[in-house]
Image 1 (cartoon, helix red, strand yellow):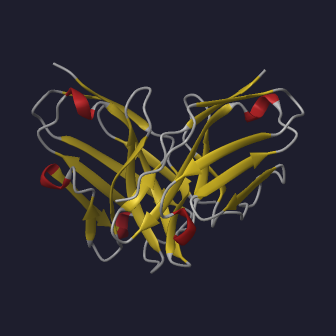
Image 2: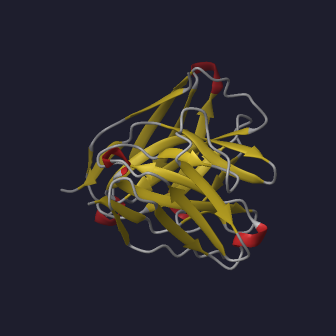
Length: 107
Length: 122
């Protein structure tokens, strides 16, 4: 079954760029989706199909994927971006797998 | 605007059954690309997919919960439900209902309910 690995935390200064990695041995053959979750709130989809943005998500959020690593990039970070970010993949054998989450702290 | 709303008791006694309902508005539950899911999050932990149901009533469960789990749908009421038997403290979590969309060989959760905290305690 798929296992996804994320760094527990990322710290970034306002205006800088945050990069969150999601590592898994099947990343290259599966679409990766990313969710933002603020304290006390439900997750919100911010990137799907590796790099597509849902309507209403700022262009500052972007995604990419290579053979074993997917990356969520938040450009020009704002205080409101402080949240936990989860990656997720689906395949027919493992069904839904979530990464453990990365807490982004804006300094 | 698609909206999902969970409802049910916030406290369940150990060994009893946890029952939740999700009301769906703003979307047809009878779409061939939509699956109606439950996801939970234990306090301070990550997200765990529980299972889903298709509008036809066909469910699919996380293997780790399959023996205790039942998910059903009532499209006439625009709702789907979760039943988890023999609960323990390990089942204490925020339970989310969500819509998952199937496309391009993958599935993604595009809409979520606000979540409901269920505590298992005597």
